[in-house]
Amino acid sequence: MFDDQEIISTIEMVKNENLDVRAVTLGINLFDCISHDLTVFKKNIRKKIIGHAAALVETCDQVGEKYGIKVVNKRISISPIALVGASFSSAQMVEIAHELNDIAEIVNIDFIGGFSALVERGIAKGDQALIDAIPQALAGTQRICASVNVATTKAGINMDAVLTMSRAIKKAAALTADKDGLACAKLCVFSNIPQDMPFMAGAYLGVGQADAVINVGVSGPGVVKRAIERNLAQQRLPLGRIAEIIKRTACKVTRVGELIGREVADILNIRFGVVDLSLAPTPTVGDSVGEIFQALGLSYIGVPGSTAALAMLNDAVKKGGAFASSHVGGLSGAFIPVSEDLNIAEAAQKGFLSMEKLEAMTCVCSVGLDMVAVPGDITEQVLAGIIADEMAIGMINAKTTATRIIPVPGKKAGDNVNFGGLLGKASIMDVPHLDLEDSFVEYGGHIPAPIHSLKN
Amino acid sequence: MKKMIISVLAKDRPGIIASVTSDLYELGCNLENVNQMILQNQFAGFFITQVPKGLSCETIRQELALKEEDRGLTIHVRPLEEETQAPVSEKEIFLITTSGPDQKGLVAQLSSIISSFGANIVNMKAVFMGGSNPNENVMSYQVLVTKEIDAPAMFAALKEKANELNLDIRIQHKNIFDVTNKI
Image 1 (cartoon, helix red, strand yellow):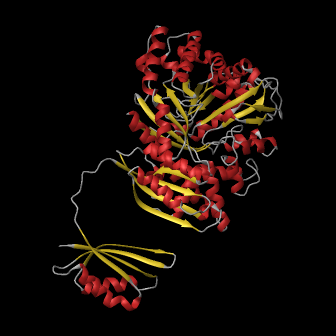
Image 2 (cartoon, helix red, strand yellow):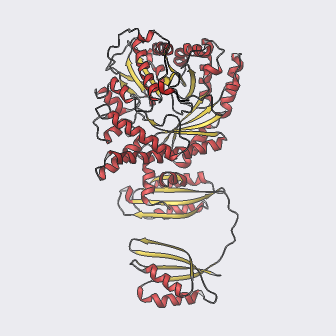
Image 3 (cartoon, helix red, strand yellow):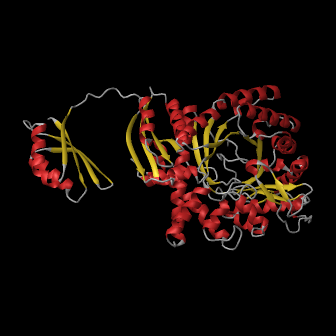
């Protein structure tokens, strides 16, 4: 029998601290669907995805009910469309996006990730067609997420791709100007993209993966925050002890994710992949990464000390996850998406968190410049420069970084935007010198891989 | 060798277990399982023991009563019959926890529903400190649910009753408590 404290603490995690399974993501390999005939290709992917995913939502709900832990999002990641659809034109890629959107509706999931290309060493024909299709594909659909990997520690940064993506982002924003550039909220540019990430918008199924796999994304910033607050209320603790508390809490949360993910995988008779423990906030009080910084004694995320606090938080979360499970993957750390976190959005709006500080913090977080709304008149060169800077952080530090930047057409720094639902709302952040047209990003070519990539 | 189960009730104080087990040792008994609990200031202990041939329940009860009568212990002894293990069907344990304002009949009303579905409560704790603070009035049942039991219907009935009694109810598979508490 469990003691009273064990029972109450577990119930509190669910009831008052927003512990949930943020995403069960079914990865589906589409390489056996390849055809030069678009009609055949669409028929093949429809049959395969529906075949694997028909029972996904029902199963997740059933397992969530059994354990009293809600599986919030059920999603699908697929092989990069730029690879499996390499023979198709840009217009045909848009058709594929619509087909995938229909399939997502049929299986009742909110997002399919994998409208993606991997171009860190160069842009192939299929990659170019996909990148060209991204603005229209995202503007015309609701459930498609796109990602393009433009850099890795082994390959360096493809600067042609960086500028191309800057233009694609601007175009996607323009096509959804009536929705504050919403299409860009479904588009990530990556350095060192993981092959097994369950979180959107960057999820796709890597080429080294099984035919179908269940990956689980667990969150829990509210649980971590409350654990810190509870312990600090009892006594003053040194930071090493607080890191230990975060680690232990992360361990518990990861075990919850693995338990549920494995059961879903067993029922669906699909291989279990990884559990990704990432402190991923939602625009809800008590489910915020920003609030953890306040629990740690900082006025707001973004003030001096924030990078050190985030480094400690990210590391403790990874250690807790690694202790809990031998199958930890994806990003596993702390996300700092501005609009998706009420507290971070407030810090930015009040001037505690600037673009420059945000970029500095991405050196130690698990993703990068995420859900950052910027003025719509930012030049493509400045936007490309921000992307290149972020990619360089990932490349040099051998970690994943990404940008999900939304240039909001017709709006300026300080204006408000509301993307709705989990994407949240925020003030547009000030980007210094946003009208520059510097030629650096236009030289193109490659920034070579760093010396420490030569490990073999 | 035959077995017996001995229950001991007493006002709690140091030395009850030492005293009872010493008595049983002197009678030649070999303990197999012991469990005890303290509810408020009352001790309750259960002892399953192998008993030497020729020693009856009544003899043991009398011997223990003789030794312990001045110590305020209430002792009950009865034989324990070995059961042949019936084939075990698929079973799972759920924790049903409620909190909410205290009122008479809470345990009776919820446990009756569990019983009506044929499910067995394998462990239970309840603390009612009275008043309306939900965290001071908590019931927790560990319920064994076999494949034959209509678990969704039982859970729905429990939720409906809890709602009627103004209780917050959580029904969760035991494994979730294992993974969050036992590493």
